[in-house]
Image (cartoon, rainbow, N blue to C red):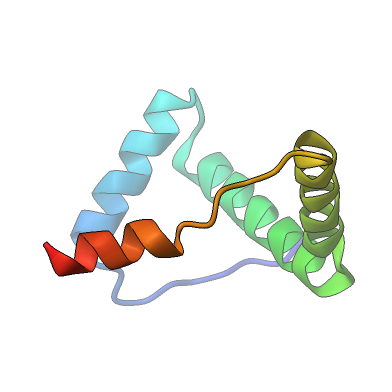
Length: 84
């Protein structure tokens, strides 16, 4: 497996990472591997459109929820608020 060396890491960041590792019951190395794994998956989902698919699903749920309902126009309320 490959190794990574990070130079000039802020001691405060290292302290926070060590705290996270303790909270999750991991070694610092295992915590960093986990963080990198999560970051790489988020990047892959972003580039493959997975996040867009989730957004489309959320929009579809909202459309179903409000289908056939009449919603008020907030323009008048905004005008009233601005006149205060």
